[in-house]
Amino acid sequence: MRNTYLFLFSAFVLMASCNESVTEKSHPIEQVIPIVTIPENTISLPMLKEMFENIQKQTEWDLKGPMLWGYFFTHNNQEDLKALIPELEKQEYIFVKIFLADGEDNSEQETYTLHIEKKEIHTVNSLHETNNKLSLLAAKNNIDTYDGMDVGPIEIQP
Image (cartoon, rainbow, N blue to C red):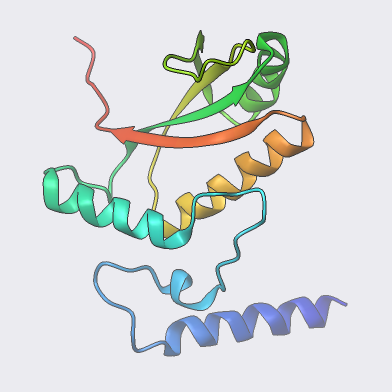
């Protein structure tokens, strides 16, 4: 069994080192690992690529360095969202707040949003993987939606 793992690891390293299409802006592993979108994740890889391209065009942020990434879950029950917080904190996310979502349709049911943050570096592919994981977490806990993310520079506190 150990030889199988060693072989697979060696084959992976060989594929990564032989990949001639790797550019300065990409990471070799992203060229080798197939990208899978799970059904629970409604944020597609092309949407993320467009988001990264827009950030590069419209800002002077260095996306190759740590950024402050915000992630959002929506649900009709505030207590269910609160129950997610310990699991997210185990994964080093920081709880920001739970708030009543604005501008909802005229339904009688309220919608709450859980906002968490994490300082991290993402590529298109790593953000896609994070979205997959957070979408699965929402589905596993019967949360209405993992609603997506935002990003900004890390503010330096005086």
